Image (cartoon, rainbow, N blue to C red; front, side):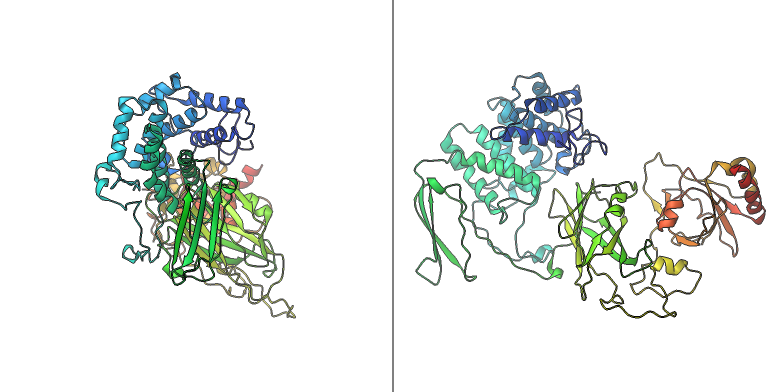
Length: 640
């Protein structure tokens, strides 16, 4: 209930941080409906959510994407935001499974919506077919969709691939009922020795099985036609019984449970013997009877060798074998994310052995523009833990857009984001030493798509503090403080060069893609175009800046000509960014001793060494000694 909004909707991070998500609300309604047979669910909760759906339904019967739709495949099957067919089908399924009558006006309007747009992929086809079968399995339109679904099957099996053209799928894929030989997939370039389906394939196949069970009249036909699909789905389950993500596990188990209900028999009595091929004597025998049919039985093999399985008796059972092994990192699949982790001395402490700063940067490099909801898991080096107060401050950092964080018992930090895009995301985590451990091993940062676990990458990092040993070393007056590279480059006094690797110089263009509503800064090519006396008080800060004409060089912020209080300003090298197609700054030709005046307010960004965005709220012009003197005079009047 912590994630429920007053209007009956739900969101991934609760009220106050974002509006309710219509897709997540449908998911909750579906789960509550299934759970209501076993625990008490307040009917008013379900009714208020149904009313929320009805209030959002368009006049054409379709449901729009309200709130964040965390799953790409709810966004029109393949993430196309203009197609609401898949989302409408998903909401319709949830309402019908929650007990809404098929003759309800909301259901009838949604039925009409499902025929507005063409079904361009198997995911949407399977989803819509199942939704229609719940409304009226005998309707001619439902029968037509079901025939389309069967036509897309390959040799009688239902392994699906998400493609734009469903008619070309008839010659693609594996027969799910056939034996699959485990072999290297090096020809695909991923260097792995296993077959792992996408989460969307499991979802699609599960909806196809549910549609088949709904459309087929005879129980015997349900069992026989559904068996190849069930075999394929069972082969994709992990060692814990689930699949790759939350969504495909929920739908996959629902489909398997529905199929199992047609197999139930009171005459269950099976003996399953397992032996090594080089032995005639079984090393274990499982007895499956009505009394223990819901109990999972397992046996650990004494050695890794080929086995044979023999069963006798009456009934149906599921047998799975699991092998776990390690692989070298260079044999893993191509990374879906780029990740870099740097370790710096903290700005919040003078003791680099007690407190450090992790700078973590990542960017999505897979297909499409962005991920679904994404998670960055930061495991901690032994003896170190994240500062809770600094983690909390990340929630209010608009640039980072962190939605939620969890700290596990082993001090690992889980960071949740709406999405990770192709624009580089960087942030800092303050960590503190909680226990002194010599020779601590590297830790891992993992970035993954919450709904597509196959989109995952990781990188190791170490705390570069070999100079901090458990045994305290005597200090001398000649010892210099250990500082970060940023502090080292900005330092005007003697300092020790950091032991960590120097961060790479900026090589990317400062131009970034922003909404068209973000304007370019106001640029004055000469000081005559700018009247200091009437304009300078409109800006909180006036920065004296030196620069190079080339776009890939940083700005050097030399002074703040409109200081507040007695805080001493330190010269800093700062990265800057401009909206696309803005030529300000790069138009100025840098001449020795020439300076720029940039008006704006980036006090926090400059202090933290973050990139500043020079947009329409900023003004840029050449800085002369006369203008600088005039600013000093006018600033006193502004303060008064």
